Image 1 (cartoon, rainbow, N blue to C red):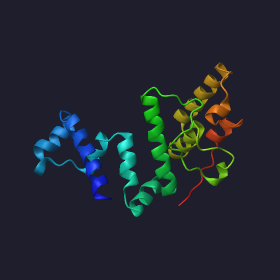
Image 2 (image 1 turned 90 degrees about the horizontal axis):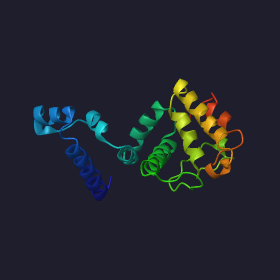
Image 3 (image 1 turned 135 degrees about the vertical axis):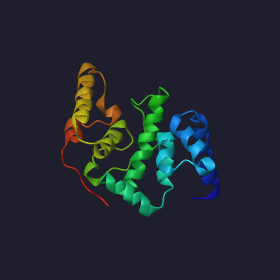
Length: 179
């Protein structure tokens, strides 16, 4: 990591530590450990999703591969996915618009999705499908999405990148492993 990037990153981490200085686990490490250093496993709890995305992006490739392997995803895909998810999260957190919005931070998609564009929100939903467990919560999410789309028939699915058979893409049970 270049020194200037490292400096910005560590300054951001210090800001998070200062902001959370009254949090019990932060206070415990600062009061009871040599130098008050907070170990990485605890520090991760303070990081926002954008910071985690930047942290991952700046890791060594071998470490990125190890993390991505946990999610059965190729590391270059995973890197673009978490960057895109962080970007979409920020749009939502700041009351931005996703409808008819082209994503600046677009996720890299697998070849089996070559018929789907990656610049709309549906591409980000596909990435979430691959890294989240396919469980009742995911099924509930897809069902709620289906109800909303049914409730608002004037919504043009193409404006959010949804293909006609979008449900099949989101509930498909087949997961692809890439390295």
